[in-house]
Length: 86
Figure 1 (cartoon, rainbow, N blue to C red):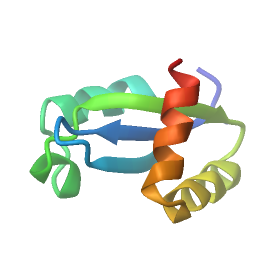
Figure 2: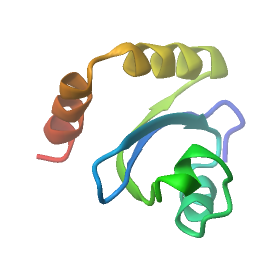
Figure 3: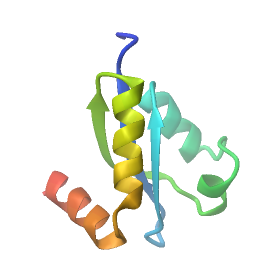
Figure 4: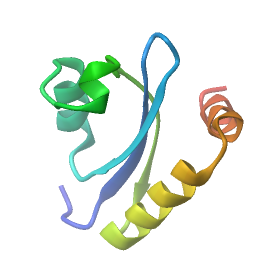
């Protein structure tokens, strides 16, 4: 896997709580979330469903995109998820 790949991702719980994160190894991270291996917010709210992701070429662009999405209203995040999964 190329070292310059980063992913911005959104997880959802069954109660529709959303979490936005950045990671280099998306498959491993989603597995960790599903197994409850990541402490904190995602484990407390049972964030287990990957509902959106995008690949970026650098850490800087990934963190900038994460900040951008986190700044959006919930409705805009949901539109992004729905447009991508339509």
